[in-house]
Amino acid sequence: MKRLILVAELVALIVPAYAARDGWVTVDNLNRRTCPTSTCGIVGVLKFREKATILEEKASWARITKYYDASCVNGFSHYVDSSNKKCVSSNGKFSEWVSVKYLSSTHPPDPAATASVNYALVKSSDDFRIYKDAFAIAADQLITSGKCSANDFREMGGWMKSSNHRSKPIYFTYCGGMRSSNKVYLNSATGEIMR
Image 1 (tube, one colour):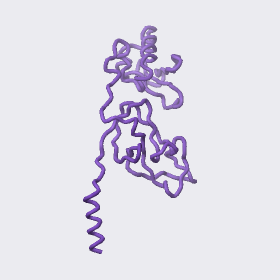
Image 2: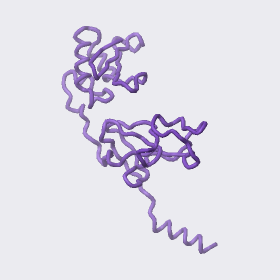
Image 3: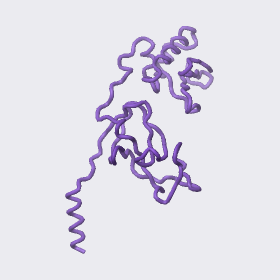
Image 4: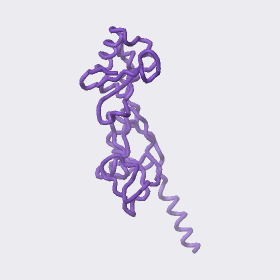
């Protein structure tokens, strides 16, 4: 028994623990998966410039959360948004993994840092890097028409992604106060503004 304990202590000294480190997302949307392969379920995304703590690396994948219950009911995980939702005895617990190739050891520069005029009014918008032109044009149209003021955009920081339209590029802001009747939506792909 003493020999087994001694061997375990020696292994602990020889095999260093993985030192967690930070990584920043370099793509617009980085899938968070339930295991270190692209066939695993997707439980959400990390956005451009978002920080993740890398707890472990396996091949070209980084584990970014501790292991947690997969919430399996009738053979399927309730946490998985898309792809493989199936629960088997080997995945009653999972953690979240992302592809290492889309993480940087340095924080990417903020594309809004050099924003000017109406771009400055919407520089804190969700997905600014992708839709900055659509956001600035829509803000200009709303301010010019008198439906919104520059202060509305300063107060809100720009456009926020609508959770009611997850699969579409629909964003919203408030013009004239934070009541639902003052919510203005923008389809950033078409430029359509709607209430």
